[in-house]
Amino acid sequence: MGPISLDGEVNYPVILTGVDAPEVVLSVKDPSGKVTSISPKLYQEPDGGHVLKLTSPTQGPHRIDALHEGKPLQGSPLHVEIVPAIPVSVCPREKELLPGHPCAVCIEIDAKPKSVTLTSVKPEVSSPIYIEPEKKSEAPTIKKLPNGNYELQFIPKQKGKHKASMLVDGVPVESTFTIGPAVELGDVDPNTIKANKSNQIPINIIDIPKEKVRVTAKDVLSSKPVPVVLTTTPDGPVLVLNTPNVGPHTVELRDEKGNPLVGSPLHLTVEPPAVTLTGEKKLLQDTKNPLSIPFAIDTSSVTNPETLEAVLRDSEGNLVNVGKIIPLQSNEEGVIGVVEFSPKQTTGPHKVEFSCNGEPIASIPVDVIQSDAPQVALKQGPKVAMPKEDTLLEIPLVVSGILPDKVNAVVLDKDGNATSIADISTHGNEPVLVFKPKKEGKHVVHFSTPDGIPVGNPVPITVVPPVSATLQNEKVSVPGTFCSFPVTVTGIDPFVSVPTPTIKAPVAHETLIDMHSLINLNSPRVVVTDPTGSVLPSTI
Image 1 (cartoon, rainbow, N blue to C red):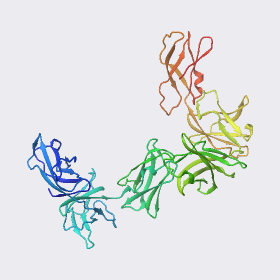
Image 2: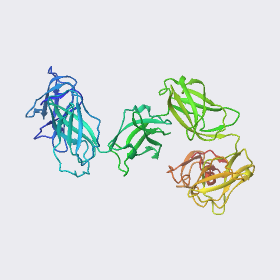
Image 3: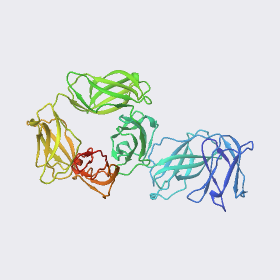
Image 4: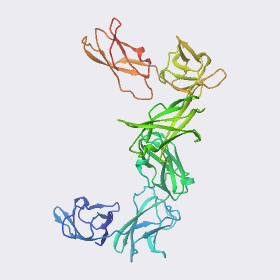
């Protein structure tokens, strides 16, 4: 065997006959004759050939012993010379490299070798779909260019990463390159990709103009899309990703025909945000008092919190207000603080942007509401049960800044159709929304004044199937003991699978389950009473 480069792993072709690769035991001795900790590997390639994968931390002659069932194989030991690494790199390409077309790959070899011999050019992963070349295939060749670099010429049959194996002055070296439209991550620290931040992620786009690339992104855990934009900076193309979610994300890049680029999708992990709001994201703003927003800092990602600054921007990105950071405090949960914005006449979706040392670290969406403006909100959760045919739904409301009888309501289903009945009435002294849904599913309630001026934001409501609960079996229980009765509850949420709940209660004589207590779908419970009507403690 010839010399082998010191740097990294080297795949050295070998001839193996009469025995399978996994049955061969290999060991390596260094120049002093001592057995090293190197673990060479022998494996078979798809084309039937065998390769010896070898690394070495020291230069000089090495001996490789190959045993089968304790006996040396014919040709063993093998002798190799470990030499200093030979840096090899692929030059920036000036033309696209596409399957089925003659390709020229420029290769730079720093060692200024006396001889370079091409041994093979293969795709790293074989594709089941091959592209028929326009010309008759020719054997790959390599030639020296006038500038001292080398040019690899061949006709690839498929897209993807390829590996060129060469002998440089007798030393086997490898160089990888990509054929076809491709994308790869640039130099990015994965710990810097944060939630609630406009992350700029450098990428390399190969053999396709940026204008022809279509990009989408999604949160893997929820399978929901997240905002992503492909743009260009002086340093090259970048993905601008801003997601509120933490965890694995994927970014898909495709050409104009919808074909994914080689290397797509890109896999990213989004870390917790550097700054989080500790209060509500619906902010009440009046015209007299400052808008105060409490927040917490992740000190592991913010090295100089004393340089923290904050601004408020509207949905178009325009600067609305510059915040004042109240002196930060430390507690057992970390560093906390408050940013104050002077009173402004502004409402609607905004973003609170934090920066440290002039570098943006978080961009958090909020909803600014004028506290002296009329508002209508649900008093309970957004899920309600479908009523019987001869009854109406009554949903308690919280109305502020306007009399309830001055508010009109329109309820639209998911198809945009209005319900036949929708009104605001009072139940006792409490305002309620009264309406008759035509079908189950998602609805939206729009509130307005008699003049048609909107009151607050549209309110989502989900109408779910009627609630019912039935015992799965009946059994005799001992009075005064704690026992359980499996019960089937339906209608709590038609879109989520709910485990079978268990009613647990002390039993005295006879138990009755009050089905009507399940009407509050946002906190389902069961009431158990004894024959006298007394309520017994129970859980679900």
